[in-house]
Image (cartoon, rainbow, N blue to C red):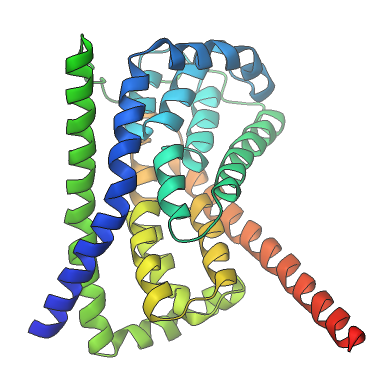
Amino acid sequence: MVGSVKKGFIVGLQTTWTLGKIIFPVTLIVTILQYTVILQWIMKSISPLMGLFGLSGDAAIPLVLGNFLNLYAAIGAILTLDLTVKEVFILAVMLSFSHNLIIESSVAARVGVKLWIMMVTRIGLAVISAFMINILWAGGNELAQYGLISKEEEVVTGWGSIIVAGVEKGLIGILQLALIVIPLMIGIQILKDLKWLETFSKWMSPLTKLLGMKENTSTTLAAGLLFGLAYGSGVMIQAVKEDGVSKKDTVLAFIFLVSCHAVIEDTLVFIPLGIPILPLLLIRVFVAILLTMIVAFIWKKAELHNRKEANYDH
């Protein structure tokens, strides 16, 4: 047991260092951008497009903040706006698929999944889902009643203070990562050494098989579903090293997780907005399963085609 804890702790530290090298600089840069005209310019640029998704121009504010920063920044912005239930629900679905885009996509890219695949999948799902909801849902035209009052944002002035705020946020991000990843890695190592992880993988095998993946991706899927994309990446980095998870399974796992990760936290944070959260959760899960199955099917067909061509050439 002591050996398992020690090994898990070391692996957790190594993973935190690997991911921290991405999280810290990205957090610093995004924090600085927050206090410049760049984000304001982006918001103004996309405001005219909001009508395509049944949103008012103001909805660009939470959408940009959520993608550049996180869900909490987006929710804080939504609470300051007069939006309908339908608009808030559309924003919630879009932000569920596409939030904290730079950090989460960069961290996942560290595993070996191409950055453009992550970005295109997440933004594409957000855009398509918003468009579909706007067309299919005729209701939700009453003003949203928010359950909680948002906290006032801390006002930061001067470049020195801005950089200090960025450094603080980056260090807090790494600390939060360490507080989850290190115990997670210790727990996984203990489960591995007790052979319980094999049992868990077999229990998860119907789901992983349905999604076109092998059993050894089950730990990554569980970690990503419960704790989020960044922490799922930490587990995947280790799984690729130790369990020999294939390139195909890595890509499929992350296509699933970009659609549906941190399902408990990312769903519950929308409760204060007064929208139906069960449909929000079901949309994410359904889209994740469907998208992963489609990609797995296309990939399998392409592999069979390439194999036939190779045999034909011989």
